[in-house]
Image (cartoon, rainbow, N blue to C red):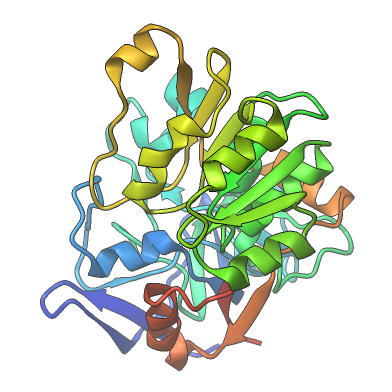
Amino acid sequence: MAKTQKAQQYDARDNKLHLNEIPIPEPKPHEILVKVVCASLCHSDVMHFEPNDQGLILGQNPVTIGHEATGRVVQPGSNVKGFKEGDEVGFICPVECCFECKPCKEVHNAWCVTGKTMMQGFSRDGFFQEYVCVDARNTMVLPKGMDVASAAPLFCAGVTSYHGVEDCELEPGQWIAIVGTGGLGHLGVQYAKAMGLKVIGIDIVDQQLEEAKNQGADYVFNSMTDKDYIKKITEITGGGVDAAANFTASKKAYDDMPALVKPGQGLIMVVGIPQQPIQFNALDIALGRYRVKGSNNGTCYNMAPCIEFSAKHKIAPHITYYKLEELPKMIELMHEGKAQGRMGVKFD
């Protein structure tokens, strides 16, 4: 095997991507060396290039970006059990955490009691490179029949959107609004329909709304061009949706959410991360007009249920493939809101 590989690395000194030649890593005893099959682009990756006060931290510079991917096992570490060469696997990005404390098991690895957690793609080299070492505890063999390339977005977008819907704790037949029907939301629509919910898709891009309809949304609304969309949703649902899950990075979308949900029992689910802090009225919350909740976007403990549910219900991302050299183009398309579904670099 070659000693070096190509990687798309972000450099904070010029705020740009560079296609660099870097060493192929060797797995530590608890790691697996994986040949990446597909790495897909998430809006969180684009946050590297944007002003942001929401907690994005770099631990090295330059750093290979990307934190959702799939691949094939090349070499398990000396202490790794349950994986063999050639296994098709997916994986998530937290490293250096203990995986055993209450936050790691029940909240998120970011809050590990050790305080040492790093995220591949941000504070450690991520997945837009040909080979990567991943923690075996963050890795699972794909269910039989699941396509290894198109499954890549499930290991961030999928887990995030699945739990963003499931954690609303709705019963079949209740109403959910999926705010933002793009890369995350088009999966959220699929999960919601598979859970038996009635779905309203909201976006500002007609192409995204068309995708939501294709995925089974009962109604869709363009919140930019239809000024009466909230009134219409209130009438359709008999007072408002039971929950609204926001998958966008739009503060304006969050500002509109209280009017979407049913007074006294509606839930606002926070998933997307805008550049600016979001605000809710304290009196509304104190008087129980609505509840606000967040959703865990993926740990090794809640990863498998999403992937298994996806395989059972044949839920798959709408994904367009590019070459590694085209990653800057992918980022430009995401910035301009022209991407439909998910975009991924396919390595083989």
